[in-house]
Length: 202
Image 1 (cartoon, rainbow, N blue to C red):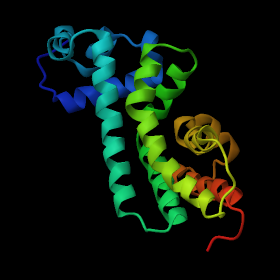
Image 2 (cartoon, helix red, strand yellow; image 1 turned 90 degrees about the vertical axis):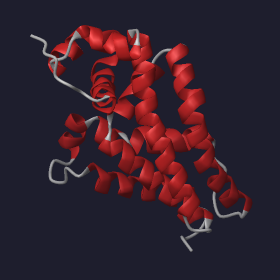
Image 3 (cartoon, rainbow, N blue to C red; image 1 turned 120 degrees about the horizontal axis):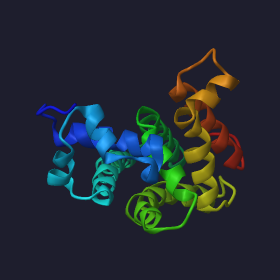
């Protein structure tokens, strides 16, 4: 049963983001989402258009907020490239732990090439990588870090440490005594970065 319950665009996009993260694009039903939110099915079409349009609006809603936060961290981070890189990566993990749908959407779209993956990568993922990669390349230039591909750091942190939040049922099997994904993921970031360095943390 639907109602005329008022719902803000932000709340609707939050719900859509979670739905796309949990069900994937193909598995998401806009009609079922509207029933769960107790709003008219026409509401989504009136505000956002098609299902594909809704996906793009929801992704922009979630990933733009992430990009803004990361840019703020990068601009306020210490001058030392190691401290800057660590601050950026930890904040990334904190933000995706708070909104694991972001990682889940990446995981879902990354299984197959397509327009949605192209959009995610070119609009959100590549710019975020470039922020962290600049600090990593400076560490390499200073001889303080091994040269590694940007993809290596992304997968180790984004899908390794990020998996602690995006795959909670599996994470719980490994360490049910510490359910805090941020604490676990911060430890994972430190482990990854210390493996990259050619010497002790200065």
